[in-house]
Amino acid sequence: MKAIMPVLDDSRKKPYYLQLYDYIKEAILKGEIRENEKLPSLRSLSRSTGLSVTTVEQSYNQLLVEGYVYSKAQSGYYVRDVFSHLSHTQTPSASELLAPQGTAENTSSPGDESPVFHCDPDCFDFNKWKKCMNKILTEFSTSLFFESDPQGEPELRAEISRYLYMSRGVSCDPEQIIIGAGTQQITNHLATLLRKLSIEHVALEDPGYLPVRSIFRDRGFALTPVDVADDGLIIEKLPTNIRTAVYVSPSNHVPTGAVMPIGRRYELMGWAASNDSYIIEDDYDSELRYFSKPIPALKSLENSSRVIYLGSFSSTLFAAVKISYMVLPEEMARLFSSMAQDYSQTCSKLEQLTLAMFMESGHYQTHIKKLRKLYSQKLSAVTDTFAEEASDFVTVKNTSSGISVILNVKSRKTTEELKKDAEQLGIPAVPHPKEGLLALYYNQIPLVEIPRLFRTLIEKWRS
Image (tube, rainbow, N blue to C red; front, side, top):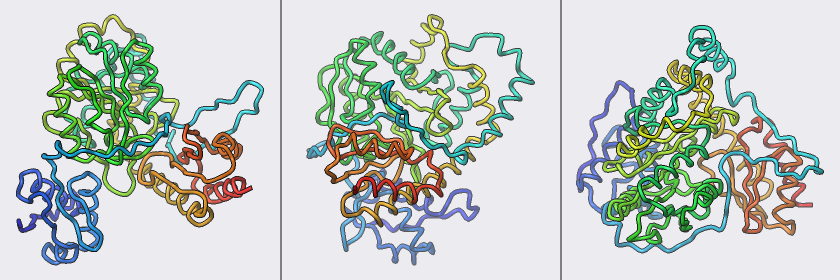
């Protein structure tokens, strides 16, 4: 066994647990620590490195969630077979759950009383946003007399390029970035590009993001739903011998919260290369992971030239900002550039420039850190309340990331009745075809209100 002796940087520019994580990950990828080899125990590695047991455990947990290692009860941590995963057959365990991304929309009929949902001013500092917007209006107002670049404002594309490299490990040129007014407009652009590349087949996660499914269906693409297991999309069920674009959320699948481990990611990229196909990586909510560092993007791995990366600001800023983007492979970026003048930019130029300044000033990075802390506290408050008050009939799922929790409710009430009870209290809820499963969105409920609101909800469900 290779001795684990990392050289630690005492300048503290990077936390010790991440330095240890990087060291072990590189050793696994280089084959210096082999498949099924046992890692040192937490205490022994703590003694040999001088790090605390907690720090070592943080490193191991990050390796565990990304799929580099696995754990055995009462035994320890062992190295996964990262590159030879192709021969393994996965047992499907896909949920029948279907959920849209983002917060629930009011679907009441005109005669119904519309639910009034909560909002939390602590989720966003509009004063900083207003200062950036005022500066654009004051100092750069002349630029607003001209239409926006069909590809998106160069200033914002440059900021997104820098931010993706720092936060998600994605290296791209601003010319590869396309900005649009929401994920659905971006997907429409993508559908046009795929058609020009003679790709007319799309595979989608099942359950998955319904609006995207509708767009591809309405554009005339042949669709193949692919089940999602505990380790993400079941790759063995993807089409072969037909060029396909597969739409996946490998870092935080909605609604199950499944994370695709590193071995499966390489397998998925191998499928794309051998099948002359593309992977559409939806990195929705990837940064809203609360109890470990965010999972690296699929696009950040080597040989990811067949990965199309999608991102959005609506869940990290505020819902009314419909600014989304995609990072195209170089070949597709050149193709879009040749046809860009046929389209007009529907995303507000003022909001694009405001966001660029918001990011350039460092406000966005600070906001994300604050949001992670706040949402983790809210998630803990939600799960604690259900554990204390409703453990006999409610099971909480997906408790490490995102802006919602999935509940399995054992009740005589229908899912629609459970949803109505929640929305009467101002809690957005999305029912799913599988009876008793419900998504509750907690992100806009003020932290101090969560215990009281959810206790009241539990009482209504019991009745």
